[in-house]
Length: 248
Image (cartoon, rainbow, N blue to C red; front, side):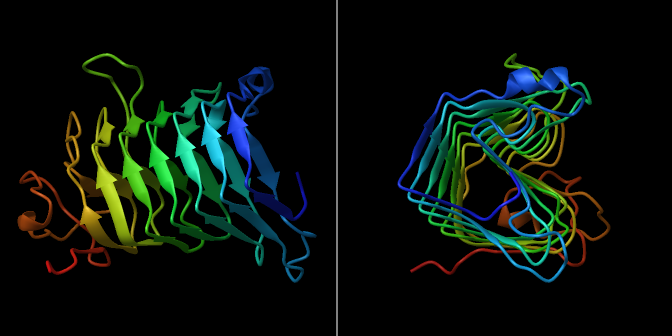
């Protein structure tokens, strides 16, 4: 869809776009797929707005188990007071499976007061995947029991970022990351540079191979292990910071 879109007070239940995967690279967005919110002229701005809605039990192949939101600057996506629960993104013929709940890309994203729970990505980003090309701001968002894993065995071969994965360039404020897991690296967040997190709570199942809770991709500077009980091999980029709120 190439258009502005407003979704309010809606439920998307058990939708499935995986049949589209018979065409190369298709099948994304189990319930919603957008390809821009306005004219692609670089000056006209449109908004994809999703509020007070529920996405449950949706399935796609490749990208965005429940929703795939691709836009063109200066478009923006706003998601508020919405639940993504028990959605799944399966591998497509390009071996992609990104964002069990939501896959976003190519423009500004504001995500607030929203829950990602029990979503599954068969490659990266059990709850949410972003390409990092533009800033994403997450406020009061909960990620719980999401999973990035190639399969449901005790020792899956692949899986990055149980809760979140992507190119970085996002800020999490007062977010909760609880009981997410990944088959390979980063039980909570797998990302690139420019990530800032203020986390409320994050008991996270460690990744099967490495990275513990959070694993930035391009790494060169050690991070204090006390923040999240990182294994000794955990490293972080110079521009990555994770800040725990002070106890009250």
